[in-house]
Length: 494
Ligand SMILES: C[S@@+](CC[C@H](N)C(=O)[O-])C[C@H]1O[C@@H](n2cnc3c(N)ncnc32)[C@H](O)[C@@H]1O
Image (cartoon, rainbow, N blue to C red; front, side):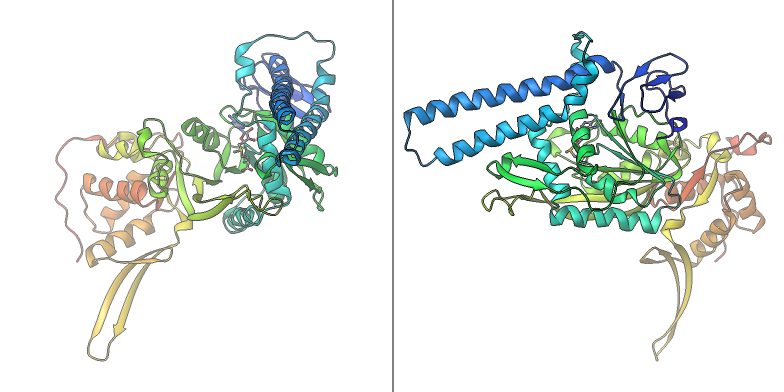
């Protein structure tokens, strides 16, 4: 990972790295450990490293507790039909515990000689709600791999091939077992996997380095699965431990950000970070159950796709692709026929960063003076067209005017056809909204200012047809657009 793309999570300044050694902020001096080449970008990294080792302690505790409980049962029921399964459970737990200890050895080595720093927040900040045992299920899903992982990955790849304009770098947030990261890495100059769990990333790194992984899957009656390393070598991969809500990457540096099954994140913070690190025109591709946004009534559960997309649009993204995708989570049936699986309809979407975030629905309603200075551009992925068709029925000839948005054809009246024609032709990615309006007036389309703003607002906020470039610093001419006087009467072409 080139440190020129990285920034300090404390103060946002440059980061310096010296080969494989720790990273250091050039301004505030904060140091970020590098463990087996994985940078630890957490606010109190040393205390958090001790926090990761607590996972071993909890797994050990869980193992010993289960061992005691099941041992007692066996003592009382030596001939039980459950004996074989009890032995398998205990042996599976023990093997996974050994694997965890083995994968955490680089953390232990790094911490040798340091005394433990007790810090509740640093411990709490690396708790991901997923135990190592649970995460091993994701390793099986990604690398065995399950059919559903393969079909989900091909959705991501198809969108990358169709819509990704720049292939410099991809960032996977909450990369987990890193199957998706590895699968898409070949399309990019570099691919960065970010996750809060160091034990998970160390395990993924070990596997991608060519070492098979023997895991025991709790939800598959602790059956064993041997996971083979990928046949393709890892491409230009970087793994970082960081919180997806505070990513150590500079503004506007990522071509694509991918998220998969990330519903537990604070979605508004997450979206803010994604918007910040995405390059202009960069893509966010997501596959996950419906998001819940702050303020949503809990009783309604996750949003449906349309509700989520409308929210995402208002946070500065324009939709490129969306669908409902059927996904079988953790399908372990090939190693345990009785394990069952949950099939869910989840959301897939790809959205492009639009360049001005602070234009909101309110900017249009309040006729915010700033809106006139924005530079609109057409959202080209919407594949907009205006069509004049003659249909010959044999009885009569029909003239039809239609607005085409991707695959949809909407009948459009003559009045609006001409307005749309003049408006879309005037939006060239250089004119400000005030100049677009002037251009319409010059073509005898005398819409009032408020009618014009209403139409543009609808096309931007409701249809996602128009995006904005960031405004430049050109001196604004004294604007009559700020006036409050009553608008001219509209006279339209018929
Ligand atoms: C449900 S798993 C999904 C893993 C992977 N995206 C997949 O679909 O296979 C969630 C992952 O997000 C990570 N995670 C949870 N909270 C996080 C946060 N705030 N920042 C970064 N990663 C986080 C967990 O460690 C875990 O690896």
